[in-house]
Each structure stands twice: as structure tokens, then as C-alpha cells.
Length: 602
Image (cartoon, rainbow, N blue to C red; front, top):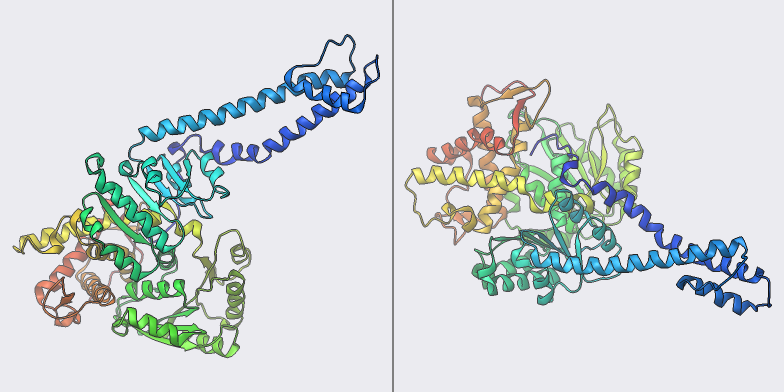
């Protein structure tokens, strides 16, 4: 949650053999068998030459070759005086034979050991699908957690590195119930399903829930089941499956996407308020999005959820896409109240058109605005070319540009290699790389959930004190809380850094030279409370809620109104939420520090 967001290095004590597994052993194994093959060829060659040089009866080439091959089974014959070539070959060949036999035995023993380990595993991690990236395996293994991987493609290049890291890799279909049983999903702590398509992932998740239901007595703890599903419609259908309700006490199901994770990481590292926005700031905040596929839509949605700033102005978004009309209709259909959350404009055009980019640049560089640009193409080279054109038109304006890249080792390195910044401020950087969006922390979100649980507990304590109905779904324990309310608490936790920036504060485990903050001034309390209410309203509107009598079933609330129209007791809830931020951050070992003078009024 720290606003500095520096990636912490892995604790070397977590796995003392990690250096050997990740560097030395894989490096040797990459040329192990070519070396063995070379030694075999050298042994045959030296044996052939040695037998050809032996005095006595003449030997044909085939005889020499046959005798040389016999060296591998310790059949060199009784030779009194032998050439040095044969002397070397008769020891080298058996050595290669012994080495190969030992390696084969090791493979068999490893397989048997893995089967034994599987039978004893409890509280482990199961990953269904490796894809093209083993980042999840690396993260869990560095944390010292046992990992079982199910991968259908036996030719997948990530299988061997995963095994080198100490993971058990089962080659098979994750939709096969026997394979899931073999991985002991009913005893796992977490199961991550990221097999490829949405349909396949949902099918695997359903099989997992069926196993948990059928083996209820063997399930020792609720299993965290993290399923990658991009389609909102399919995700909703899956959530409505009676099996989810039937196994609610056995599994905590979470749907995630790498697109959503990328968007969250993007605005964590490059926030829309990259310059402080105070309550009196006259500037509007603007976001230009180029390309509006799955990634572009998630970026817009995350921005709309998080851009509730101190000055209270609506975020302005301008979207450039070749099929802007079609994209607009689909987006507005999914989020019909979007215009109450942000002002969105769709521009039908091509990013290769200089006129389109010139208009967009003029919009984000307006002196009355604080602008950002995000390029969301799924083609790395096209995205990089767009960055170059935008940079050429920016002049002296400071507008952060984020460009989607598939991985950190390809064209993304060009962004880091070239100086795209002025006055020490980076203008362009890549985002969306799989090795960053599909990590242990981004998928499991343990730190975020710690804050979300604490927020919910505080809310329940406040409401219980007011003698609220015990049947209220929002007052249930975290384990029985509806998924949308869990997500609401997570969104609130995710918004804390935005609030802190508005009052000139940051959070960090340690910060040299900063002034620790134990509480907030009355002016800060007002700012934070107003921002929280605006965030809550935006989140509810995007989730399909409408004004009306309070009803979770009908998704209506009388509090979807401006701050000034809220009853005093509801305003007090928001103020108390702001007052609790220091205690919440202490739950994750962080402290507040002030970087600017405190505002004196709201």
C-alpha cells in the first residue's frame, strides 16, 4: 500500500537453495546433454582409432566400430599393449555409461518421491496452467511454499524451470477430476486457475468446487480459488451457479484478470494525480486512452473507480479507437451510469493519423488540465511507434505516457534505454507485462485483503453499535460477506494512497526525514471523508446501483447523492472511516508521513 511502491527483494532466508536452482543448476542443465553426447562421440572415436592401431590381425572398419561400442559395457578385450587412444576410451566410455544410468535412476526416484510428496501435501499451492510465464511458481517458491502445477502441454518450455524451482509438475488436463484429485486441491491453501480461455478456466473451477463438495469432510480450511475470467457476463453466470453458494464455506472464489491487475498496477505506479490535486485546485484531470480493447476498457474502468480527488471534479476521459462507435455502445451498455462517474468522449480515428494525435495532445496539455496518456495496443511495436509520435508532439509539457507491453525483455527495454524524461521525471514507461501482472501479490492480494478485512470489521463495529439488523448482509462476517461487498472493501483499501496524496501524506514502512502523522486535522478529515463518499458513490454506480430505498437485493440506496445531501450520521461514518486510516495501515506495518503542510479547512 505504500505510495513509493518499490518492489522489495525476496528474502534470501525463504529458500536457501534458490540461487542454485535458478542460476547454477539450470545453466548446467542447458548444456548437460550436449556435453554427454560429445563425450559419447569422443569415446567412440578414440576407441575406433585405438582398435585400428592395435598390432596383429587386420580389422575392418566395422570391426573397429563394434569393438569401440563394446567399451560402454566394459568389454575392451584382453590387450597387452594398447595405444593411448584406446587407453582413454576404455575408461571414458564406461564413465559415460555410469553417469547416464545414475541420471536415469535419479529421474525414476524423483518421480516416485514426487508421488510420495503429493500424498502428504497439505496447505500447498496448486497452479492450473503455466502458459508462457512461470512467475507465479517463482513467487510462491521464493516464499517457501510448496507448489503443484498442472500443465496440459508437455512441450511447454516453462515445465523444466518450474521443476528446477522445486515445484511438482503434473502433465495432464486440469479439467480432469482425477488430475485435480491427484494434485489434492481439497487440501490446498490456494488454487490459481489460469489455463487459457475463460470457458476452460470456469470448467476447471467448477470441477474444483465439485471435489470440495464431494470431499467436504476432508477439507480442513476454506480453499482460496482464484480464477482468471475476462468476460463479465461469464463471470456473472459462474457466480450465479448454485455450486458457488453450496460450497461458500469450503472455497473463497475470486475472479481476476491480468488486464484488471495491469490497470490497478498502472495507476498505483503512475497515478492520475501525478501532481498533487488539492481541494482548491482549479484544474480538471484528464486521461487519454489510445486503443480500447480488453486492456483499454479495464484502464478506463480502474480510472473511473479511483479518480475521486480532493477538488471533487469529474475525471475526463477521451478514448481514441478505430471502432469507437462500437466500443462506446458496448461500454455504455455494461456501465449505463458511467456519465455520472466520469465524462467520457469517444473519438473514432487511427493513432497513425497525425490530426487525431494532435487533437488528443492539445486536449491533455491544456493549461487548465492535469493530463495523462495510456496506449493499450496489443502490438508492442505499434505501441512503441505511437509513443515516439506522441513524444514528438509534447514539446515542453509534462504528460506521463504509459504503453502496454507484452513482456519486460522485448521492446519494453527500449523505453528504459532511452531518456524520455525531463528534469528527472519519466514521461514514458511500459505496463501490463505478464511477469508483473500475474504475480503472487497481484493475484492473491494478501496485503489488500488485510486492509479490506480491517475496514469491514470497523464498519461492522460502528453499525452494531447503532443496533442495526443482524440480518443485514453488509454486517456478516468476512467469510460470509457477499462478493460485491468484499470487492467494495478492497476498492476502499486501494483508494487510500489517492486520499493520502490529496493531503500531502504518504505511507511507508520507514522513511528517513519524514514527519510521522498520528492523526488528521479537521480540514483533512473533511477532505478525506468527501473523497471516500465520492469513491463509494462511483463504485456503486458502476456496479449497477441506483438511488432509492436501501435494498441490497434491488441494488438501491438513498445515499447515492452529493455530500451536502447526506444525513449527518452518514457523513459521520465517512469521517470515522478517514480517522481509522492510520490504524488500518498499522495492520500492514506502515506509518503515515507528511510531505506537505496540512490543509486548514475542507
